[in-house]
Image (cartoon, rainbow, N blue to C red; front, side, top):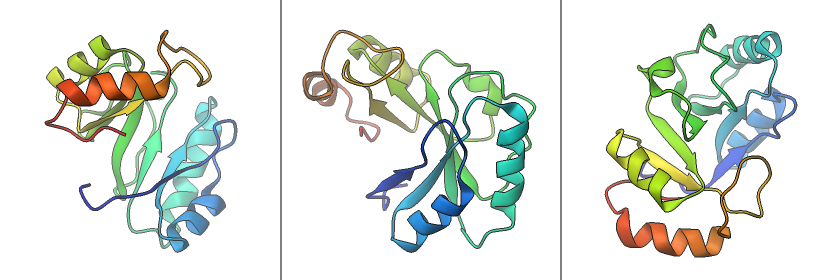
Amino acid sequence: MKNITIFGLTPFEKPDVALMSKLHQAGAFPILSLGDSLTIAQEALNQLEQTNIPSCGICLSNDTFISLRIPEKVNFVILPFGVSINLFSNLPVIYQISTLEEARQAEQLGAKGIIIKGNEAGGSVGYESTFVLFQRVIKEINTIPVW
């Protein structure tokens, strides 16, 4: 993952495999957001297997997707901090964190990276902006990538 410079994450509500192909063609590393429907998520992963995308990531919003069949081309999973790492024990995990304490815990849990999610983001967030939180995190976390 050290050579990855730009992540291309599909929009949350609808897994979009066609957009992943375009992201790959544009030179970004494609990540498929699986939305919130187990059936639609599995259909998208099945479509993904048929593409010429050699490797990608997936992003999950919760732990209800334990029964998914994940294609081999998936290199890692992005999870909100607090979702069990045991769900995808064979995949490296990148955690979305919203506090410095979550960043510390993610590092201790063996995360392969962390994504800063500040208070200007949607969903569950902390009290700090991304910029402020990022500055605090990179002072302490230097063994894994921070995005």
